[in-house]
Image 1 (cartoon, rainbow over the protein chains, first blue to last red):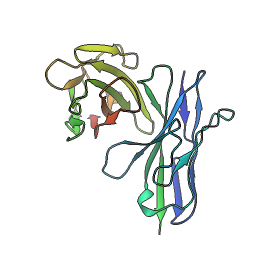
Image 2: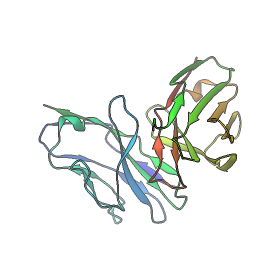
Image 3: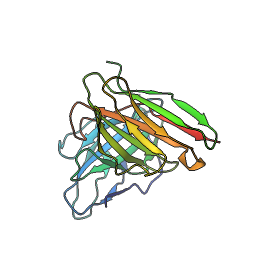
Amino acid sequence: AQRVTQPEKLLSVFKGAPVELKCNYSYSGSPELFWYVQYSRQRLQLLLRHISRESIKGFTADLNKGETSFHLKKPFAQEEDSAMYYCALSGNDDYKLSFGAGTTVTVRA
Amino acid sequence: NAGVMQNPRHLVRRRGQEARLRCSPMKGHSHVYWYRQLPEEGLKFMVYLQKENIIDESGMPKERFSAEFPKEGPSILRIQQVVRGDSAAYFCASSPRQGTETQYFGPGTRLLVL
């Protein structure tokens, strides 16, 4: 079975401060990990995936297989980063995504 | 390209009624996925369809729920004899090929069962 856990439901940071969203997963094989974002009144959209190893909008995420984690980080949060963030996993069925419950991030001026 | 379209955006039904949720994939996409998000939870996979075929319905409840993706027209998720526990947000995603990295999500349908 595959499972994704996001322990923080809400996260509030000041503009310019670092932000880290935690994501832990359980899966017996080699998963593919993703971060999705949903801005206010917009659709769920892919932010980044671990395979691409790229930085999107200043965000990075490193897959740590030993700790089974895929935390999302940004060194300097901006107000436009306020959104709902979901960590997701896909396993051998490469079309099936499993999502965490999400973390609502609020960046205050 | 208007993106994945879902309608209605909000649907209210009384217990025992039927709910029909529609999803029009992006142009050129022949793969459709339905996910359900219960309150305070993440999205959960329900079913994966290609045109006229159900590929994987392992996440869909065995009773009362059905899905189709006909040759012409939108994909339909049908819930018969709705119960309060069916209240959730139902999201549809589409892709041009099988996979996760190319899934584009619709805005969702919020179903409320009274």
